[in-house]
Length: 479
Image (tube, rainbow, N blue to C red):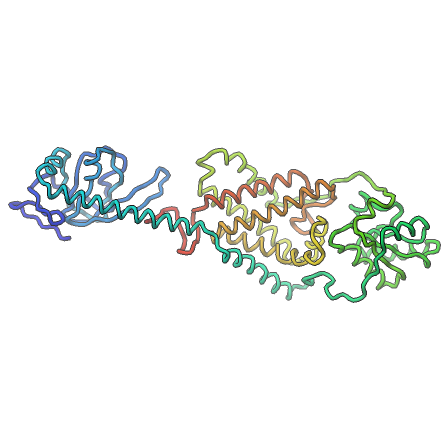
């Protein structure tokens, strides 16, 4: 509203004509007039110009409340209540103000009921408007924190599509389901039949597992022919069988001890293709360890190669165990942003090492002994792409709460696999980066537990530069 100034009749403020009072002052643009928290001393009337009213938290998060122009006033709330200033005021442009002292303000209210009613009306209006803004902000925050099924469908669906498309054009591609539609079923033999053949020396037992598993425990007298080294070791195996007395009348019984049956079934099929005669597999893939005489050595820790920078970075989330004990740090959005970058880099690095060689990763999955045959290749194809997609979403700040949930789920699955491998003394490495990786031990479990805690912190407190349905949310929040 345009300010009208008439020294004979007084000043007009929002339609109210007041007697001449106060002190004229000119405020340059950008000048702080009132500071939140200070003791109130003056009431201000805006004759011309524009000011901004805002609140600011201790950590610098600013909330703009309103802008006031000519004919408006501010500072009356603190003078009426006697409390410290509830907001700060800053000149947006060069402004001409009237500064009224507290004594003058009290005298004005005592002798001007019309102004008192006007202030009460204005305060009531601000209270209702503030409630509405608060409700709007709460609704916005609730919607921001909500996770829809679309978030998961977007990330998981994108991972599956990328995995399928890239696998088609990958020189190292693998079938979606191993042995799907394979011809020539391999006959199975029961444990009792195999034990009888063992006792009567009418069978040659072949262990299809990797050498580390064979050395740890195997059927006494069995020969090791690792499936992964078949082409290299078959000539020697063929010569050994040929030198075995009565080999023409003996059945070759293959066992592997894996839930997926990847090693024993595939090795038996390769032996039949090489014309090895009667070949069968044990029907009970794990029963041999309780039925046949055993020999082997004490479990040894699997050989490992360092994972490089991602392996060292995995230790950083472990520090979160200490930081979560400090409430201000635990709730810090900056910690969430740092965690997003850290986890995103780790998972993207591990994903890139596995994407182009899914067959190698599939064998690592088999080593854990927890995945059925039909799921191994699907898991080996899609998991690296899921790590890549979710890692990118975390770094870019897109759907970060859903992304943190998925990475947390991956960590839980991996922790379960690690604990299972530790309790069963499996001589394997983590398989994080193809053929190389760290040994499976409690230190590796601790690393993944740290990353899981980091995911929880991101889920609860991530607010910095996040892309929600309304665009990017920066640290400075305007209401």
